Length: 371
Image 1 (tube, rainbow, N blue to C red):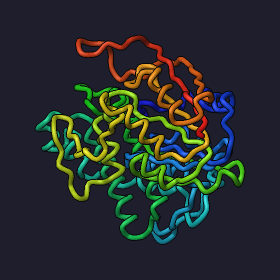
Image 2: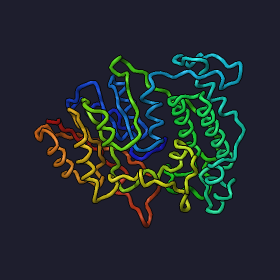
Image 3: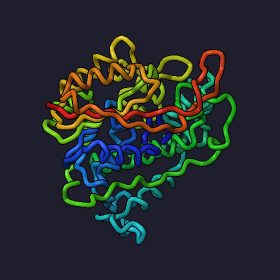
Image 4: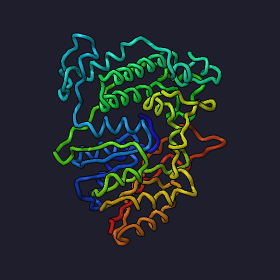
């Protein structure tokens, strides 16, 4: 999924940076998980990972990519009376039928005129009123059918929580591939892009298989970072990857968040883009007057031997302030940082109201050892 701050391209740098900085142990905490790419990489590196985030869409990816230790099997009742056995190319599946077969079953459902069709595609009266063009009518109907199918299976007891989140993660990724946006949902494109005209295609999200017993027992959490850190207790390392600019994630990803949360009770949408109520999701990290205190608060709640902070050089907190805060929170002499440049993510072009400083930006991995 296209996601601001996604660290997939920086994973080699982050893992090598941990080695360079002398971070050791077996239990890691990742309270700003996003799409869970770092948590997954840590698990594959042998860490037991406790992941978390305030966004429901993140929780789906945490379960799918970090918590699950294998691709689960599903009840054959999802396919009718006969069902089938796990597919030959899904050797890690267990149970009555395979994830691949369940995905095919969801894709075969006839289109439905549901919440997404009504509010985010030209098929809906509410969407036409605001000119919303997030999805074609065909793809919106397919998304509604899949989402309603997942919910009905869960309501009837045919899906447990983990299996539901695994299917939701697949739907969120599929919808993002055909979304008529430039990568974020703060706006839609006024003409149909080539990707938006392709049919919705669900693809399995594969859990990370633990390479060793030490990587089992990973957990997922939906809620504020400080609350998660309190619950996690003593860990070897806390990896902090918070928002670094003033873009609030609930407004930039409100439709994927809707797909994760559902729409019962029906949310009251607002504005041309159909934003959802999000006050409880808005972050102090995205506010200039509060971001430094947000860092101090998280550090106060963390009981970790090692602290890592991944932060963009263009972030709201200046580099000298980050160094000062981290030195205050631990062994001042242990503070170090390593950096790497990369090509920035751009969801739009330079214009009258925005001008990027350049096509490349540097990510800093800050480290301090706690007292």
